[in-house]
Length: 403
Image (tube, rainbow, N blue to C red; front, side, top):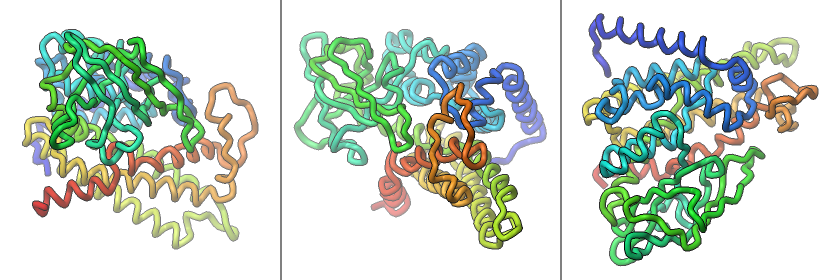
C-alpha cells in the first residue's frame, strides 16, 4: 500500500482539483447529458472530447516525459480516471493511448515513434486492435492470419473478429503469423497496418446489446511495408503480453463502478414493493452491502497493483493485472445484475431508440432503464474480452504457485 508525505497528499489534492475544474468547464453539456442518460455518442463527440484532453497532454499523461507524456505517477493516473468518471465524461478510447502507444514507444523504432506517437497524443489518428480470430480468442496463440515477406513488404491474409471500432479506425495493430514452425507463440509478429490499405474489408457485428461497436476485419493480399513491423519478427507474443497487461488494468473503471452502484441505491430507494422502498428490504440491503465490500476489495487490489507498477518501472505485472481484471469484471457484472433485478419487469422492454439523441418517446419504467439495460447486456462480455476469467485464473495460478 502507498505511504505518502503531507506534501505529496497536498500535491495530489491540487491535481485532483485541476482535473475536476477542467471537466466542469470543458466537458460539453450535451455529451455529459448523453453519458448520464446512457445514450450512444457519435465518433465526432468522442473525438472532440479526446482532442481537448490531448491539447492538455492529458490523453497520454501516463506516458514517460521522454515520449511526450507527463510521466504521471500511478496515483495521478488513478485520480485522472476517477475524476473523468465522476464528471460523467466519456471513457478514454484505449486503443491508441493505452495500447498501441506504449508498445510503440517501448519496442518500436525511432521512425515508428516519430510517425505514430504525435497522432496518438493529439487523437488525430484512431486505432483498433487486431487480436482475436475465429478459433483464436482465449487461445490467442492459435491465430491463423498470415504475413508472408515479399521484398520490402508483408502480404497479409486472414480475418480478425470482435474488433471494436474498426469502422472508425485509421490504423490497426495486428498480431500475424510469420512462421508456422515450432511453438505457436514463437511464430507471431506485431504489425501496424493502415486501414485504408487496399484489400481490407470491415463488416459490422451487432452485439447482444443491439449496438454496433464490434466488427469483423478481412485481409485479402494486403501489402504492408516491412518497416511497420514492431521490434523483431517472431517476437510479437512478448509485445502482445505487454499490451494485455495494460488492457486488463484499464478494464477496471472504479468511477463507473461507483456510478452504477449509486444508480442501484437510487433505484432501490424509489422502487416500492408492499408499500415500502426496496432500500428497506433486508435482502437488498445485504446485497448492496456485499457489493460495497467487493468494491472496497477491488480498490485495494488497484492500490496494490499501482504499488507494483511503480516498483516495476511503470509496467503492470501480469499476475496483478489478472487478479484485478478478474475481480473487477465480476463486480461490474454483479452490480449491473442487481440493477436489472430492481428494474424487474421494466427490464423486459428494451427501448433501444432511447439510446440515441433526439428520441422523444415515453420511457417505460425509470428514466435510466434503457441505459442500464444496455450496460448490463454489453458487460456480459466483460469476463471474456481482454482475456477470459478462466485465462486470468490460469495466470494467477502460474504466478502464485509456479505451475
